[in-house]
Image (tube, rainbow, N blue to C red; front, side):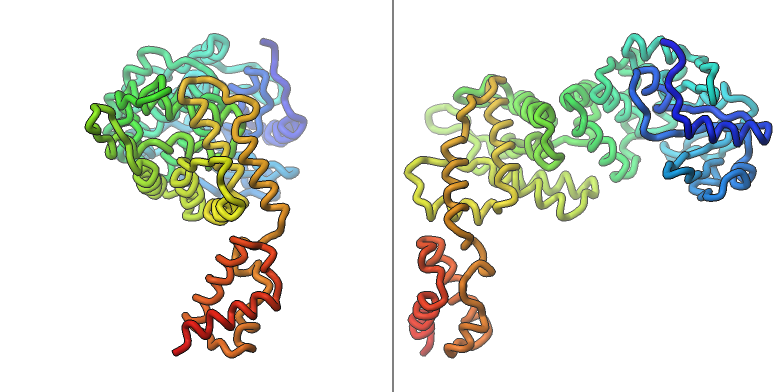
Length: 452
């Protein structure tokens, strides 16, 4: 590993600090990624300059965390978080230091970092690399190791255990045994971390190439039972038929499959949670077979609870819950076009492809076998054919409006709503009836039926 590529903007920023007689280092994940031969997108800098001094060096500076020695510099379209060398006292709340004091040297600053791979500093503009804890060697060997004592690092910040397993999935690194063994003792600290911070880590796990790496480590260390007990209790729940795996491994395989297919976050989460309703709905039938009737509804309910717990946005929650609730659809070629139209209406035209991706992941995870190339193709062709016939899936698609019904004597109110819904059902069954004259004629008949 030679010197990493340093962006010209960083060299310009370094020149500003040198002009004031100050040192500045690229630190943290940016250095780790550079030595992994990845271009870093976010740049964190450490300096011996005080925050007030940094604010005089650049035109656009925001005091984002000045009480902790941090400011954000906006320079040529980039945001750089710049922190004065510092050390920290005890972490009473398990997340933030009680007191911050400035340090004299970069080595002292690096000693407060979480993992050796993040405790690197590259002196700008061209080195040397400061590596007091062997982080470069750990990056080379793909190892996640705490700086110093794992018990101490995790007691300081309850998010760090989750970061360790997240990095394992994100980077494909292995958590060193002593670091992993220190996680169970810190669960009480992790339990005090804000839900939004846990959510951010879960998002990064889900966005990784193989999320199951993190979730299996979470299971091994107790993090899964602490943070996602609904998923953890799927362990040991065996399934019938062609299923080769218990519900937990099946769910993790489904999530990994969605990740490999680069599916959106909603699909990945729906794939992960689609069967979490199986443990509470499991019952043995008269022949001694375990059944999971209505597990889709229970899974949707539990999914909503989980996502609310971690403060996901409402619209996002409803998208994931909808995919989970609908994942058990069963298509037969005997379906009429009207049945296909009702499926489109129930699922939503814009959500059909996502739902089919969840079903594909679910099918793969049954036995770990890729679905055939013609999987769901007949159904997709039917859906495309029905969509091509015309759009009559919502009240807005009707050839008549409420005003048209008023013109033939229908009064506004619930009665009008009933008529419009019946007209919609009519055109779902027969799209050719969706023209103004025919619908007004049908509306008159319905109106007479409901009018005393």
